[in-house]
Length: 147
Image (tube, rainbow, N blue to C red; front, side):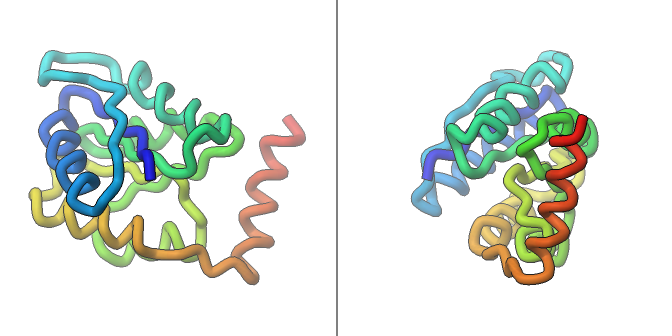
C-alpha cells in the first residue's frame, strides 16, 4: 500500500524510522516532508497528507510531530479524515477497530524506535469492526456534511 507520511521538525527523526518500518512491512511511504530538523510549522505538512486521504487518493496516512496533537488537530479539519493520536498498543488497536481511523498521528518525542514499530504495525494490522461502530462513524461524518 502507498502511505503518505509527513512530520514537522520535532517528528523528523521518528518519521525517518517509520518510513523504514513501512518498507519492512511491504508498504511504500511517500514523504511529504519536512526533510530536516530545522524548525517548520506542522500544519504546512499535515495538510498535504490530510488532503490525500480526504480526497480518496490514498486510504491511510501517517503524521508525526512532537506531541502528535498538532498534526492530529490539523488533519481532523478535513471532512473525510479520522485522524487519531496513538501513544500505546491499546490506542493503536482501538482507533482502528472502533473509530476506523485513516490517519495515524504519532508523538515523535515520546516514542522509542521500537515503540514506533509496534504502534505502526498494530495500527496497520488492525481491521475496523464495523457493526455498531459504523453507526457512530456515520454520525461523525454527518457533522461535516451539514456545515
